[in-house]
Image (cartoon, rainbow, N blue to C red; front, top):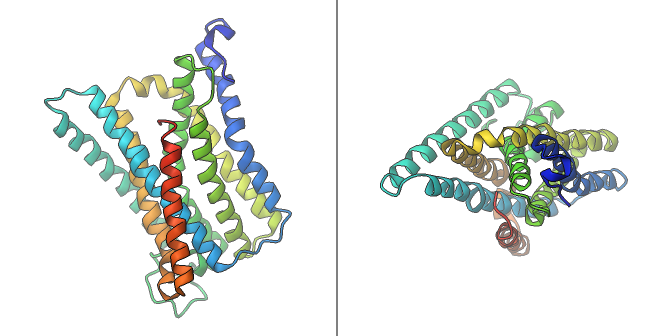
Length: 300
């Protein structure tokens, strides 16, 4: 399914460009179709179903962050630095990268929420927690809602670049087939995000048509990031500490997002019936198992 550089007179950049288009079509076709299908259905989803969706999604984020990106960052250091200095090098690169990634994310989160302070819980005078703890179901202002949604999608920045780098790697190494495991993993977690964002927009008062259009726009954000990753990959791969740093930053961003943006959505199950509680546990467990199995078929 992928072209080799011999198909274009050994022009690597042109081959990468064509393979990027092929890869993007496989990555985005299913999420786009699902987004279109949702625009024709009645946008109703019970609160318990949303909790189970968040639970499954949270599990996927946690496994992607740890078994995926953080593990990959550790392996890059292990493969490129001497055994004698391995522990100190790992601590320095991964520690500093984690600090940078989390500082940027927390800083952006604080500024974004402060900008909309008083609007996020505008009609919830009785909410008993800080405005800086976001529960999607309590957000009343559509613009403020997008602050929460963008935080949920913040991991796509590094994720998109990493996907682009994988296209460069497959092209440069002469792979003839696509990484099916990567496509499945990406599609599943993007589908969950797409469904969540669609229903939340409708809940905030957005029309189905606009919710679908905005969903499509959020999917398109991955395109320029993949191009950046693909055409800068040869330089990034030549700097192992930078590659490890990117994986580490992506990993900690995903972990932070999973815990602080999704846990508030499921924390209310403590007051629910045992049936709802254990169904949430089951969905969380399925998310863990499912993502582990999928990650077993590919590497970032």
